[in-house]
Length: 193
Figure 1: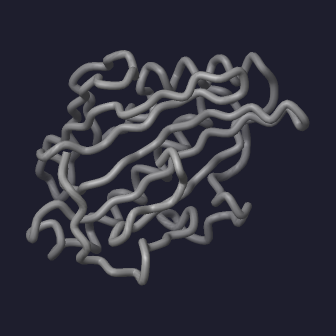
Figure 2 (figure 1 turned 180 degrees about the vertical axis):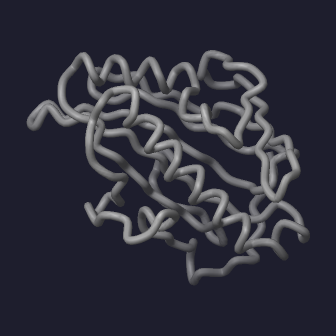
C-alpha cells in the first residue's frame, strides 16, 4: 500500500471522504485512527487496540450471515508526518483474504481540507473464500463505506464518501475505483507472511 499499486493478482480499492477543514480536525481525526475507531461498527469487534506501530498485531471479529469470523493482521508501517497520519497492516493466515489495508488522514495545507482514506489490495486466502468472492468483495466494500462514514460523524462534517477521482458513490457499496493487478489475473498467489 505504500507504493499505491496492487501486486499482480490482487484487487485494489481506494476510497476517501472529506471530513472538513482545519488543523484541529486533522489532530482529532489522527487520534481516532491511532485508536482504531474506524473499526467501531455494529458488525465488527476489535479484541484490543494496540498502538499502530510496525510489528503490532491486531485481531478482530466480523459478523456475516449470522456467523462471527476472526481475522488477524500485523501493522507493517506507520505514517506520522505534519500533514499525514495513518498506518497500514498486512493480513495474517487467519484472515479471510491476503493483502494490505492502509488508513490515512490527510490535511491539505493549501485548501485546509482534511480527508480520511482507506486503500487496500486483496485476494482470497483459501479456495472457500475464492468461491464466495462476491460476498467477500461486498463485505470489504461495506467496511470501507461504513468506516469512512463513521469517521465523518464524530466531527460533524458533511458530505459523502468519494473515490480519489472525486466521483460520488451511486450506490451504498460502490465507492472508489476497483482495479486488478497486472492483466487482471485473479489466481496469482503472492508469498504468504
